[in-house]
Image (cartoon, rainbow, N blue to C red; front, side):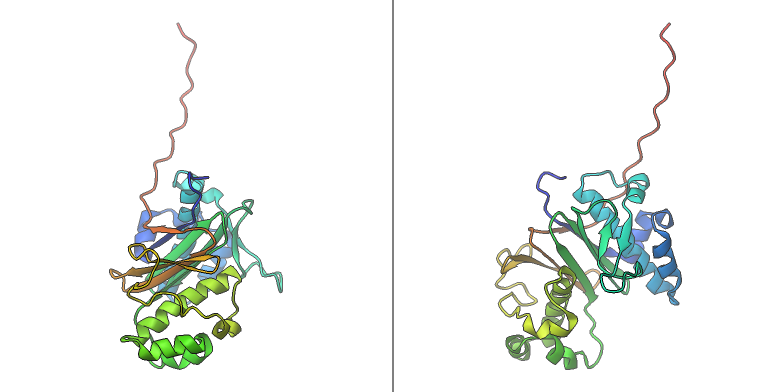
Length: 253
């Protein structure tokens, strides 16, 4: 475990991750490969694979393990649906590491992932909202949040910020898709970060949870990380060079 053990999150471009780990196909399980191959669009497949690679990079960072292909391959991602028992969906986990919580997310061209010794959820979305997305506010936002959205200078930005936060709550098991209006986050800062406990890091508290907001202007994306631990966010690092095999030494002469 790292010195602090704080949850680690990363946000990166899909192409950036795949270029960083050119041997990415070697990391995936048979289930992950099958799910990726079932996607008809190449862009969607790339986003899926990059998110599944990035979550391994987060776990390696959290565990203070070198981020090389050998180590990343040992971090086996699995999913299991508690309802139907399927391994094709459900909350992600690392095989043999029940003490590590992981989460991942992907949108067009951008991926996010997180790993922590505490429960953690992460979500990322592009800032360009589809037409008519505000019609979903009644199914997503609380009464107080809908009022705040109407009064906000940029209602779309307000809605998107609350949406990525609430997606994290779902991934943490603190909310359900059908019960989002009961989760009131109107006490949290708006899209500009005003009112955050730590404005420089976009960090706020909501009950027993830390909420870390992140805006990636380079990729025109918005992300959130929610955890019972104080999360950090960063970019993936270049892979470490693997240790060369030891050369047997002959008897001294």
